[in-house]
Amino acid sequence: MRNLRFYRLFILENKLFCIAFVIIGILNNITNLLIPISVGRFYELMFHGQSNKGFILDALQLNFGKSFDSFIFCFLLMIILKAIFEFTHKLLKDRIEEKFISNIRSFTFKQQIDAQYILHQKKATAKYLSRFSSDFGSMKKGLSVGILIFFADVVFSIFAIIFLININSTLTLISVLGLVVHIISLSSLESKRKALLLERQDSKAAYLNFVSERFHSFSTIKIFERSRIETKRFEKKADIMSASFLNYSFIRSLENALIPTGIYLIICILLFSIFKLSDTSDSIFDGTSSIAFILLIFSIRPILKRFLKVRVHWKNAELSIQKSLSLETSRMEVPKLNFCDGTISFTSVCFGYDSSKRVLNNLSFEARKNQITRICGNSCTGKTTVYRLITKLFSPQHGKICIDGQDIQCVSGVRKYIGVVSEEFPFVGRDIFEAITESKSEDSRQKAFAILKNLCQTFQLKQPLLLHQLLINGGSNLSQTEKKVLIFARAILSEKPILLFDEPFAGMSDHTTHFLGLYINELKRNRTILVISSRNCHTIEYDKIVDLDRLLPQFDVPIFENRFNFQ
Image: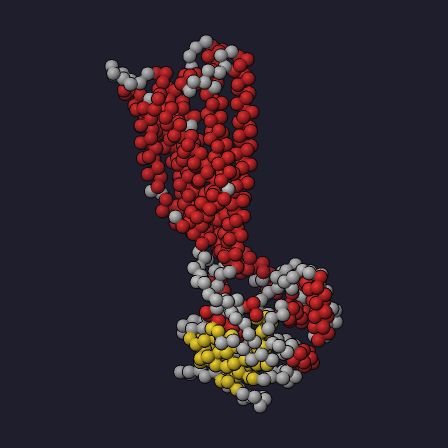
């Protein structure tokens, strides 16, 4: 029932649209039934005989068309009404589906953007993209075909059954029982179809993810002559996807074949019953009413097919909603961080990316406002892990990380006060201005221009970067130094009271590092700064050094060691 809340809330919020859609659907079903049946009246006018379709019209007490002129008028009127109903029904269907899916689209995107970093990293990008394509299509059909059109068909069918009972109650009972048996037989294929659908979706996601990754690494494939290898791998992925599609296609084709076959078998049983029981002296069948009954069943055959297919739409929609809800986590209400001066403290922090190896073991240090703290160490000692823990991308397995004495795992809004200078996070935006600022105001533009100009001089760029300069694929058209400039500008323009610098001097010349250190010193006022770097910068006035691999201090300042348990 939890999965139906999207539909329930949407229908309640859009009652008028949904009611109008259902009513138009019922009227459309009526015109679909009356137009072919009314041809029986034409037969009676032309050949002066009694037709079975004319009998149905008389039973419905529709006495139009007693003359040719009135028949043509009524027939044309039904055609015009059919066109109006068909147009309105399709228009309302598209409007309702798009309005519904726009809400789901926003909800799903927010869920995925707000998901925990560690959960997001566990799934390939294409897994998320599939939710914005095929899954949304299934959810739309779940609303329109699975609920609204189904409800209209149910209302129409209730009146149809009442009318059929008036014609012949025995044949009506046989028809309903046959339909129930057919629905039960189709449900036996449900588990197999669901398993094959999941297999198909997973193989499609793997295929799309492979293609996306290879085109993203296009230059690597060219330089290292990997086109032949990657083509073979692509063919394997494509073969797996094709096989899963064919397996799913088999079960779907079987369902599509069984649905009309079952309806025709029900009609066959009706014909057999009429034949066997009509010869008895107390027969409840007469020729005209029996044939009229069969013709009416044929006329409502499309509605019966929708009845039998609706279960497929329900299950597909249910599966898609479950996948959309898979990132939804129950979040406890936690207080927001009460920020004071930005003091960061690690107390006996332990962390490992897997259970077999710890990266940090009993790490303790404190970084204060108006101070620059250096986190140093060789590769694989956990330098980058430190800023990932501070920004809550990961959580410590033991110990506490506090800001202003508050455990960051017990408060929200921590990243609101932290700016990060790191190459790990790609640029988001069409141009430089959009990539380094959150606001589009003129004041922000002036401030961004001034800081960008200052940084270009600090990094000694020959060509200054311009705010309107376009970014291609997250900055692939920029040099390494130009990217570094934008990474600095993005963090500084955020005006956060805590700044984390992750390997800011990597790839920089000694000359550039010298001036960059002086620039970082200027940022020290009213900020807490952590410089996470294996490379020393002699122009930075460090207040503390946290040595993760027990290197000797280079300055007469306190050292906090990270003690490892070597075995």
